[in-house]
Length: 241
Image (cartoon, rainbow, N blue to C red; front, side):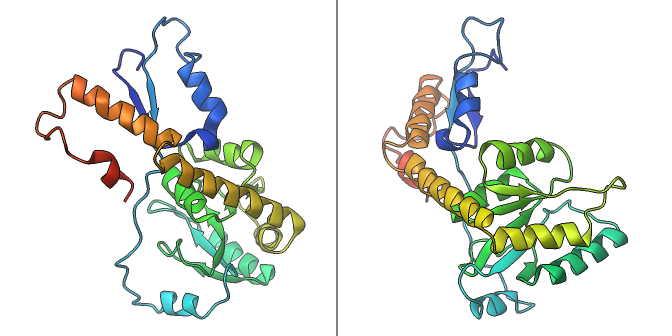
């Protein structure tokens, strides 16, 4: 990777400043005098809209108070045993909170908390909406993401598993209730709302991600990778919607 023309990352300075600095300074490439430049252009997220309300989920959300619903989503590959599903159901009931267990309703105003598998796209969407999280990693890099969310960024609570790898109903219920109805939960919410503001600033003109995207555009032009585009193509104005 050190021999690349550049490395593009879907993140932004305010979110992962320590890691980005280490990459920029070449700490990850100690044997290279000129490490590849880093371009942090995030958060890049899919835009909401066009969902069908076949099961009435969106209609139900519309009837709920602002930031009162806990959303559970574990990605397209998230799978649980029958035992774990039972614990999830009982735990949600124990939390005494409104909840919705679906895939795509994250941007709704009534959502106030997010139980997530810590996939990076889901994390960026939660930050973009200012939602505090309960971190439940399942596979791949999600366990590392959980550590960053809980320990470094302080925008999520961690779930503890039993020796059998099960998150108990009591554990899930307690963490969801803590997220939605405790002083620590309010502190996490305040932190993630500040991070939301930082994500908007990063993508605005003059922000860190805007500047990096401009640098990347210039690099591509220098390498003649944009030969099919006219010199006046408004790349930056369209990229962030």
